Amino acid sequence: MTRILLSGCSGKMGRVITNEIAGREDCEIVGGIDLFTDAELGYPIFSSPSAVTEEVTNKTDVIVDFSNPSAFGGLMEYTVRNSKAVVICTTGLNDTQKNTLKDASKKIPVFFSANMSLGVNLINELAKKAAKVLGNSFDIEIVEMHHNQKVDAPSGTALMLADSIKAELDGEKKYEYDRHSKREKRSKNEIGIHAIRGGTITGEHEIIFAGHDEIIKISHSARSKELFATGAVNAAIFMADKSAGLYDMSQMLN
Image (cartoon, rainbow, N blue to C red; front, top):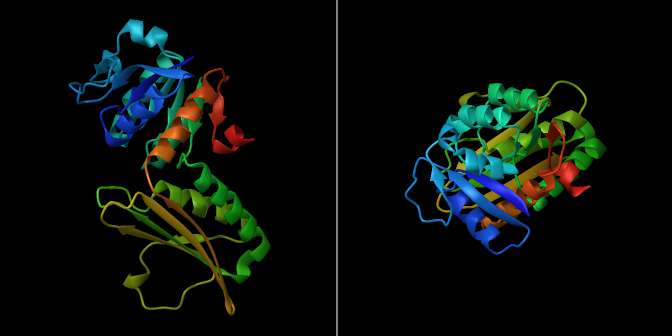
């Protein structure tokens, strides 16, 4: 039985994860962290990592974080101090915060993925293969769509896809986010990234490889938040017995 401390438990994804775990027998939530502590979720909720009791800390095997980048520093300090494995699902982390994850992974097990969906990680691998085969002869554009409440743009998943593609291509590539602000032809060394926000779109990602007289598209459509919850919970179980290091979806799937 894997015992989980859930950061961001009162948010939308936190509640989905709570429901997901309630239907499983291989894990349980022993506590939650959230500014909104009055939610009735069936376990104690603490307003910050520093407020978590020693009893709950001692019970915890893995921390799952689906909160906000602003809470990242305090959570990582608590995680490292108590030598707990952590699954970071929060999006919108900056480069400094990502470097903090790398430093922490030298001391504790850290799982980090820009997207917890199996399908998204599959199209990531397909995109890498396509980039390797097609090389620099195709123009590459990435389009992502999310609900109108999402604050980061482009999405972490779009950047993950772009980074994976970029690693397979020769020469220096730049990301183009704002093509409308200039009047010039598209350069061959750019990867276009476009963010659309509207309605209740859960998550759509499409990679377009546009060549001479042919277009190849790789896409993924998320229809509910449950698929991200399932991925996060499976990652927590995967991390429960791991040694210090930085892990991602590729290790979990192999």
